[in-house]
Length: 247
Length: 256
Image (cartoon, rainbow over all chains, first blue to last red; front, side, top):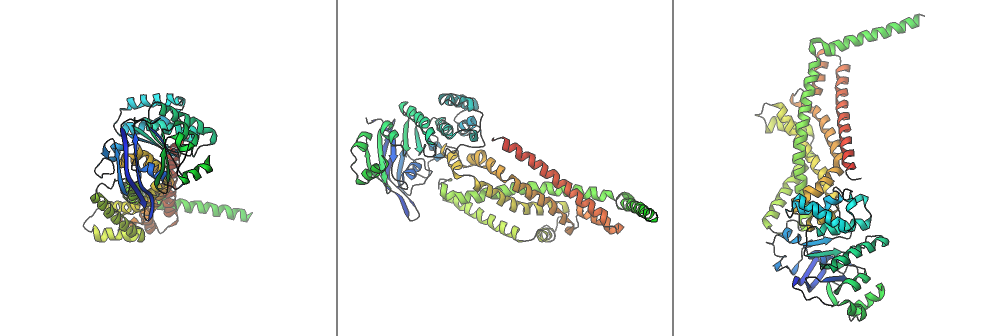
């Protein structure tokens, strides 16, 4: 089931090196509206760097990233405006410990002028209700479990009404029993039509939810296919090797 | 029997002497006013120096930590080579400032500012405020910078990924956490500053220490005035520690 929406992000020969070390070596792909893309690969292969390049947390050393028609690698682009439409969820949640749960969600929409305090408050309540954490609105992040933290981190990004959500190994830092609740929320998002790019080790999620799976190794996309083909009939020998180890 | 009487008489004499000394040191000619006025000057110098230290120290810390992070995090988006140039220049200035201030004795700095740089300024309090403020700023800057650098880079990335700009992220996310982490070290710095103002006498300024010393030089009785001076410093520092302790607890309660 491939999605044929309009192109949201288009990546062209993206390169990134840290000094001598080349991490991304010419990545070209397109992300369409409503697509859910899973990125897998061995550790250190560059998949996180690729994801972090999409909102310029990593500055690419070559190539272009076009988001909604704007080349965001252009120095004259206001990257803050762009990032408001690109939500990101981190492996280690990165909630703000000095703000309450609700404060975490309201901070960016209010400070960036996207919403008034009242609007943001309403939006926060609505989102917390949706993930069943409304009763924890006034708690601080340190009082939440890992799974709860990650759900808050997800709705914090959603509060900005982004057009795409980037997930950087969202379940890797969680206790096994908490992985389910986070994946469940991500599945709901996917069902609601959110465009998602997910770096993950959860092969089940990739197979079940993604429209397309990318295999990155040595800074390049080695295989790119629908989950059925990707897992059922892998062509790249390194992907076959990788899958035999993780499945 | 006679030994008891002897002891009694000694004790009595001691009390009499103490009374005399006390009278001489503090009551006669209203000498206690030396201490009160000195205390006033000490407090004024310390207070305004702390303000200068905090403002300037935070500015320096922000310049230094922005410079340290800037390349890695693309915080300025590499947008303006010009801005990067300014930042590099400011960072250089700050580094020189820190090296000079932290590398020379406070007394020497005070003397240089009084006798060389501000030689035409007659207001000694102003000179002292400036000297101690500039000195304190260097230490505050490094304390605050260590606080900023101690905050996980993920906090910064989370703020930026939500579309907040560099200063919004600093003000709302990084600084409050950094401030809480460095509060004990900052309090320590202010205690040091308060006590260090006791060298103000070097430029002939009548601070608390100088006040006690004047009394000593008039009465030739060093014990009481100097003890009084020490006790007043001690009380001030204890009050300060108490206040900071309360602030710390309040900030911590905010999170647990």
